[in-house]
Image 1 (cartoon, rainbow, N blue to C red):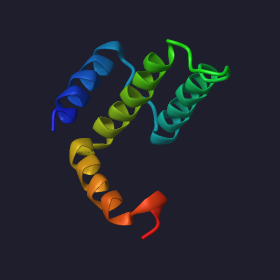
Image 2 (image 1 turned 30 degrees about the vertical axis):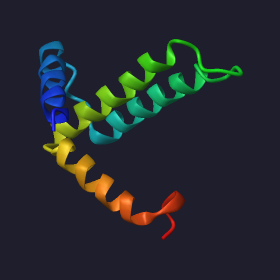
Image 3 (image 1 turned 135 degrees about the horizontal axis):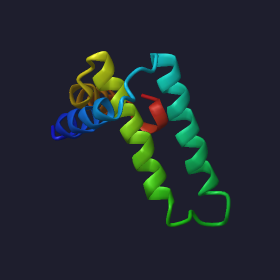
Length: 93
């Protein structure tokens, strides 16, 4: 899955910037702050054009955390998709 390539490339940039010194808890807090920014782009009747950028920020923060912890995010996504497919409607069998 190309996800791993993107995650590695992003993590290399994070290392170059010196932004890999967060604890996992701090990284999760930063992901949460990005989610809050995405929420702000949805406060009207329709999402603003900036929602896509905020969603990208969320994904990149997740990629950074996964790479920092040595998690193969591509494999985890593939595995989770298989599990979710078995769950049926809204997580119910």
